[in-house]
Length: 349
Ligand code: NAI
Image 1 (cartoon, helix red, strand yellow):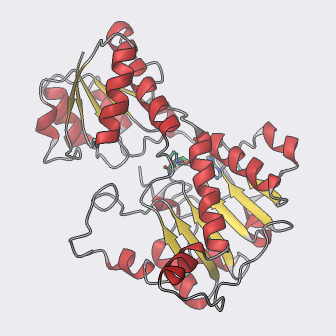
Image 2: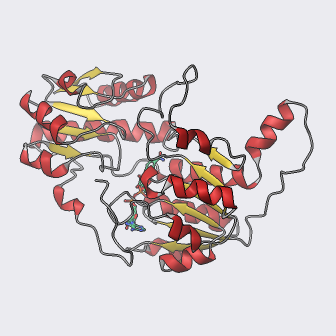
Image 3: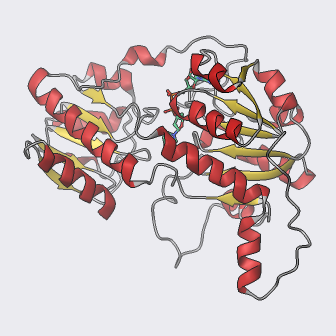
């Protein structure tokens, strides 16, 4: 199958080439660095399948261009699919496949790395020591043992975070409309979102982006949280209202903030912009806080995760070619989400 692969870096090419070779080389892979968007959609021309990542845009106009030039399949190299207009894809006869799970531990461990780095001010300590400043003033941390950690979304990754934090001796609270049965094994307790926000010293967001989770951490949610909370978002950028977070940091409502994802990360993350001026003032403001640590959507970036992403992508392509449907399809029905005890907000799908 001819496949045009958008948003690729050297590490993507390496793992996809290896996975394709391991499957006997069934696909002709054409790599592009460009992100898929309206301007770049014609680059997909002639490919039966296009393969994309989290910041590629597959709205109706893009899908129409792809469909008109013969594309019948979209292979997402991600679990999330909020960047695809699934209804338009279905109408245009394009099937969509995704990678439902790839080393949840890689994202869970990065989430915990952010917690530990922030809690013990490692980023500040690193910079100080390199300058010969060994003073401890301003580096006061707190023990994780005995603290309450709240995990919002306990799917594959959230459960792994819960397990690790339980190992540190945290009391773990979890909120999920479909709580995982695995939580009880390490003493984590399923609770409502209000209780979690009220009691947690650490809050970790690991649920998908959907109409009911868009900006779920906004000014009102922050007001319900413990003052000085350590908040981590490694789920999806738009789970939080960044302007409200900045207010919360300025007022001290948020004690530490760790982000691996950012609502406007497209065009910023995954690129070397070190010679350029960052034009996003909200993002630039975030970077001025000493108690904020941002990584550029890096949580998935382990050899284990990239190998699974590549192997599953090749499996989706092969299954699509042979049976007309990817091994792990995403269908329009997945847009229907369970009702939960929150007021629905604007859609970001
Ligand atoms: P999953 O599908 O296994 O679990 C998601 C869980 O969220 C499910 O249990 C679901 O019931 C729950 N959920 C749905 N709506 C909710 C709500 N309103 N409140 C609380 N929970 C809700 O997904 P997985 O693999 O655990 O991924 C979690 C998130 O991590 C994904 O949304 C994805 O965007 C993000 N992710 C981030 C990566 C990174 O590199 N930073 C890489 C991979 C995933």
